Length: 438
Ligand code: SAJ
Image: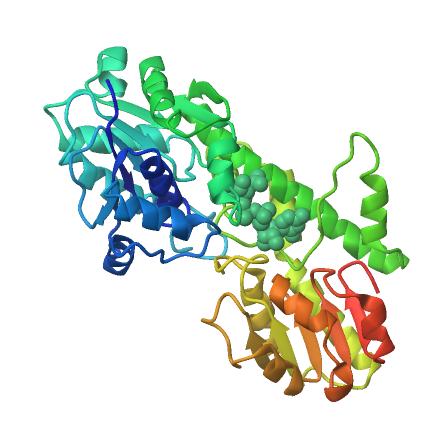
C-alpha cells in the first residue's frame, strides 16, 4: 500500500508542522481543522501559530499545491489525528481529573465517512492508555462495511496505530525529523504501515511496540520530566532556607556523570507536562494503585506560584510595602520562554494569588498579548513598585538586563526564572530574590 495522499486532522502546534513536513516531501496533504480562521489562514499560505521555520515551510507547501486545508475530511490513504485532549470539567475538588476524548471521537467519526479499504489511521494526540482501541471502536461503529484490527487482527481492512509526537515547542521542525519515533500498531501490519508513512521525513529510528505501550510511553516521558522538575523546585526552596545558591549547586551536581538536575522555576505549564501525569495518575488509580510519587511531584510543581508570591510578600515587607494595594509588574504569561502558548501557564495561579492579596497588576508579555494590561514593558515597570518575572522571553530579559532602573520606582524584583544579572539589579539598590537565589 503506498500512502500518496495524507490527511492531518487538527492543525495546531503539532498537526500543522507535521502536515507541512509531509508536504515538504511532496506528499499530497489535506489538512483538516474545525477552526475556519485557521483553515483560511493556511490556505493563504500563512500560519496561525508561532513556530520557528514553519512559516516559510508552509508557504512553500501551499504555493506548491502540496498542502490545502479544509474543515471537513476528504479521502486520503493515511489519516493522522492530532487533536487536543484537555481535562473534562472537574465535578468537585475530590474527583480525579478525567481526560476529555470528545475531540478524538468527533475526529474519528468525521474521518470514518471517507475511509476506504487499505487506509491507515494514526492517533498522535497525547492520550490515556486505551484511547487508540477506543478510537478504532468508534471508527468501526461508523463503518460496519469495513473491518478493524480489534476484530480481524492482521486481516483488517483498516490499519490503526498510536504514534506519539515528542517535539518540543520552539524546535518542532528539527525534532520532527531527528527524534526517534515510537510506533504503536494495533497489529504488526499496522506498525509497518505507520513506519512507511513516517519514513517520508523521519530520520530518527522508528521503534515498534503495541498501541497501549506507546500510549504509556508518552505519558511516562512527560511524567518523568515533571518529577525531575519537582526535585529541582524542592531543591530551590531548601537552598533558600540554607542560603545556598541553587543554580551554582545544580551546575556543580550536574558535573557528576550520572546526575542531570533540571531547572527550578515558577511552576510547570503547557498542555503536556502539567497534564500528562494526571492521565497516568487516573489510569493507575482506576487500575487500583495510588501513584504517590507522581502525585507529590504534581503538587510540588503546582505549589511554586504560591512560593513565588510568598517571596514577593516577604521581600516587600522588608522594604515596608504591603502587598495589599501595591502595584506589581507581572512579566510573562506564556508557559515558557519564546513561545506564544499560555496553556496551563503558572502565570494564571500567580495572577489569582496576587489579586486575592489586593495587589494591582501591570501585566505584560511580548509573545502572548491576551492577558496584557499595559502596552509595553516600560509602562509595566514605570507603573509598579515591584516586578515578578514568570516567563523569561529573551526580548524581555535583554531589555531588563540593560534597563536603567534609576528612572523607575522599583524596590523589589522576584526572578522566577533566574534570568537577571542579580548583581546589576542590586547595584540599583533593588531587593533581588530569585528562585533559590538571593
Ligand atoms: N520547566 C521547568 N524547568 C525545566 C524545564 C521545564 O520549570 O528544567 C517548565 C517550563 O518552564 C514549562 C514546563 O516545565 O512551564 C514544560 O516545558 P518543557 O520545555 O519542559 O516542555 P514542553 O511542555 O514545552 O514540551 C514537552 C516535551 N516533553 C519532554 O521533554 C519529555 C516535548 O518533548 C513533548 O513533545 C511535549 O511536552 C508534548 O507535546 O508532550
